[in-house]
Length: 260
Figure 1: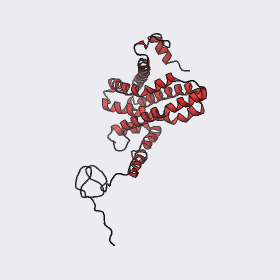
Figure 2: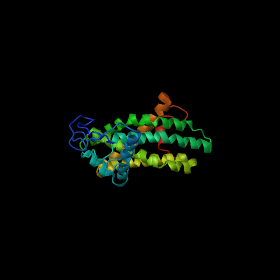
Figure 3: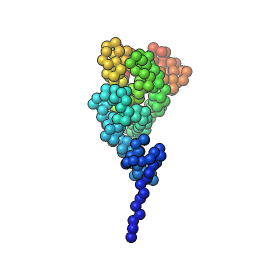
Figure 4: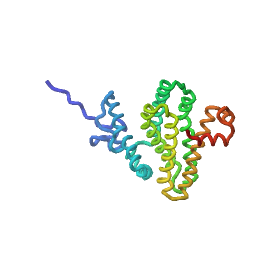
């Protein structure tokens, strides 16, 4: 009884280049690609998350241990070494949007607050991030255009925001342990997020130069106020500065810097 031996492909299934080894020398795809299976999908997800060279977990570890190397390496052309900044931003933002409603559900169960205002603000997070990101990158470019181009500063914001979302996701269990202090946890994470932006900006963009560090501090506060006013606009429309919670422009700024 003879077993039929599977024929090896002669051309790459992706770009149709003649094969001369286990991988295509043009696009890098594996030569022996078979019909797609569920195992392949799960393997691809696991490989994306844990790949030694460019997995998302490796990226997060590097952000915690040596964030400067991530930015400078990516800017210098090490694109294959690191997880995509766009995917990093989308994955972390998506996870945060998906997971945080469970915090509201648990808060309702324990305190019976029925915090619909908080739910609405969280729902608007994804819109605020997408609207503000290009504006923030442009403001950074106006200050640092002699050192970085607009694309590099956009990557900086994508990486930095993705990392702040990662920190918020990692802190999620704290809510369930201290749900009655949810407001304090929220405020603490907001402060931590902007401190991360200031810290990364000072190291990577300002390169520890006092004048540029001061510019980063001003920009971080501008970003914070932009986010706050956009939140008000998305909730209250044209009455953003004239409602039961906010009375005028300067009172709105005062409220944004009031943490409790």
